[in-house]
Image (cartoon, rainbow, N blue to C red; front, side, top):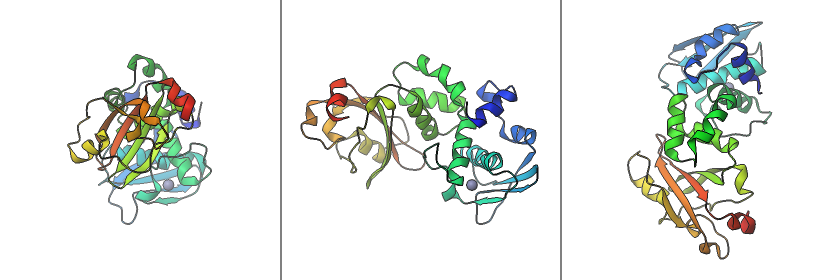
Length: 254
Ligand SMILES: [Zn+2]
């Protein structure tokens, strides 16, 4: 178990509804206050075994919760120090083993808000993972759709890739362990459902079968289809869940 999960277990928190960050903060000597901040989104002022955490009151949930968790991450990893965290410092999709202080704080927040030990038993009831299933989990955990989706990508063995795009193309992709080294194209195909989502509303689009060539730039890949589902996030990007349907595609290109 990771440190944030150990803290939850130690406090007897086993239900996502009980992940109350200001209450958890008090248990580790930190007090959380929401107030207007200038020039940063959140900060922690630590001295010996006490700390005060400020989070900008204009930041709304689920982001507010994540920023609070981020400061608790600094408190765990960098006890006694003070940090001033700008929006750019907080909440980047990241390698949980990174040694960068901001990324460590992010990883801690992610583990606190979407603890793997609580996600695990909820994964198999989802069956074939869809954006609707991810949305349901994100609501149970009061987390963003993107953060929940990344957590699931890190835990599932289903052959899925999560892709974030804007009109300029790919911003990032997060493959599950089930797809090997398969990587999607850097540009966005105008025929893909991601393009439709970018132009449309913030509703989850239908799950569609599309030619793999809309998504991958590999020789003869058009012989395969993939199943995709997209949604436009509140940040204005298209988030797509792509499922590889034929294991031979991974054998050939993964
Ligand atoms: Zn920080």
